[in-house]
Length: 498
Image 1 (cartoon, one colour):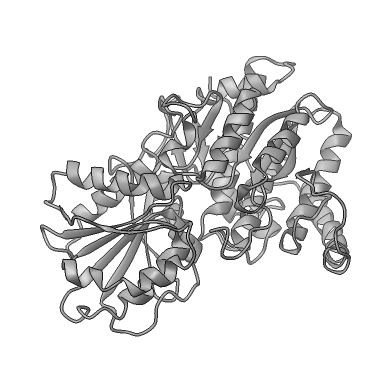
Image 2 (cartoon, one colour):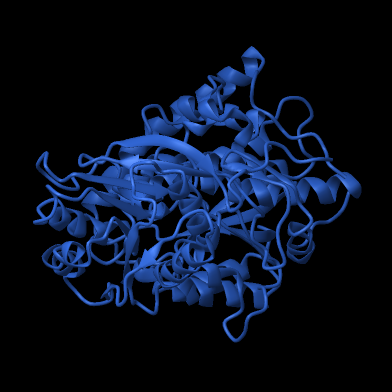
């Protein structure tokens, strides 16, 4: 049974002023929090989970203060469950392939979902949501400590029922997922696309009690090929060079290249010619970007029309710098294709000069432009949370913050999916005492109206079926342009039936 979705379009004046009053109070303490973080060295043991009162980094101080304030209100109600949002809270440059901005956006999106649930139009839910923040550590090295901290919250006054987010598609994330699943904790992954991430470590079966809201690498690759099939700027029988990161610990890169090669081999619209051997590098070793920059001339040697980059966006930056000065730029145009991680390079200088004769496109996880140019691709009621003017809408809570990297939207949808499970369970069973196992069981039954696209079903591996995938281009200055909307089949759903 489908129930009404808590919305966020219009508020009474007292609701609006209450929200703004809370925000103003929070801003008043943020400066003190940041000063304390910067001035006094931290000698206490590391904190792996917090209600927002512990500041993981100065960059997160404001959003953590907002979360902490809301959590205090939630605990005062006496009727709540907790969701742990799991991430690399303080990423380190040249170690973690995510910039601090992405983590801040993650937390902003998770907080938005918390506020949407706790402050709906109309009747307030019987069970409120407390949002806890769990830190996996740089390189997700503290995944086990984070898992234990989360597990301790299940049979505690915090009454934790789920973990959301989970960081990125690497081996340590899979270990974290296994540990949480072994303790029957519901898991909703956010911006995680690696094909193996919803499967058990010791086999090919799906992880019990887990779903993801992001599209898989297989779906991303299929959508990219569907777009290339209709691209009139490339030859009818294009030569394709696959550039593959061989870092075995990175499921994102590892499964991306395989998925793309399989997609072009199975495609009937065009005769793609995949060169053999391709190009290989290993991001686990130092200097990957510089090596790729020095090796870019290989594109001319293979006479490639299309390059598919199966790696992280931070490594692509060096490769593009080399491609921009390739010797064959004047005689052969080049289309470089990548996957969602490229969005993290937004507003970054990727190459210099005007003679690159190169187009860079990628399949994304979400684009705010699809909300206006392909409106049915996502739920209008949920989109309003990111575009509206209400007290608890994104522009009010986080003025000037960007949505173009997609992380706030995916993190919102991950937390929102847990809340949808709570809604279904409590609606069908008024007065129910929710448990982590119940929420885990409910996840696969859901239809989720998300801001990143409609999820009308999860498949047998707990992945969203045929979810919308925006195709974007990125220029040398890191500016994004929306190109088209695609999906694994080429046509995403525009709504879910009842």
